[in-house]
Length: 282
Image (cartoon, rainbow, N blue to C red; front, side, top):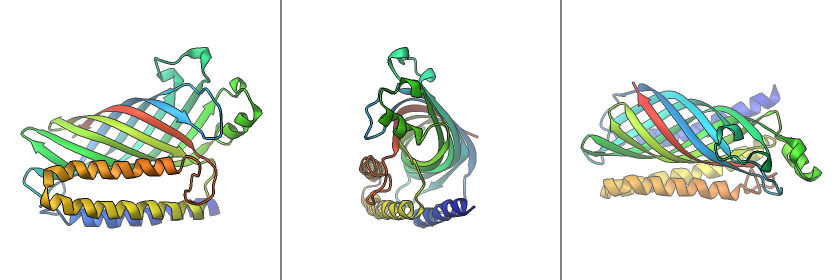
């Protein structure tokens, strides 16, 4: 019970930081009228798996994912062709070598991962006639259950590393950058790149402080890009996308050896995935 309380409390603190960002985000729109609609997103991609400190030959996984959520759009003060976009969602997915047609079979270690969680993506959209381009950034919490063929591991040390994750749900986080290309109202194609980390253990204090550091930097970037949007709305749409995703990828790299960087902690399991998604808004 204590562990559940601590995890819930860390979510609350992170949510408060995100809410502050969201409140600032809404101040730049002409109206509080929400165009909130249900949405369904289907994704497929190829995942690579890494865990620093091990020498392994884990097969690349094919990821199949479903997202269910609500999408909101607002008109923007930044320009008549600029919109605000937000999507809040629940997701479930499976990443397995069985889903990857390029798997080499017995030459690589078989693995499988099931995950679920919830997240939020936001963007500024640029209208080009009937087409709308929305380069976005998203952040999610996830619980993942990883299994692998431990009989194929070559060393006991590697087995010990992976057994911390094997056949049990572990907490982690997911960041994603992509372009929501709305071809017609209600239908979008989304090329995406995702990075995910899975913690071998949840260390509440260190994880909370690491998240506070991350979200503080993200908030500063968000305010910086808003100033760019005031002077160059079209260019700012893409600067916002580039800076936020570069920042998140930098944090992903910093955490490859320390899951709660900058604090001493174990290395997390890391997934990086190239995906293509189809989104439907009703």
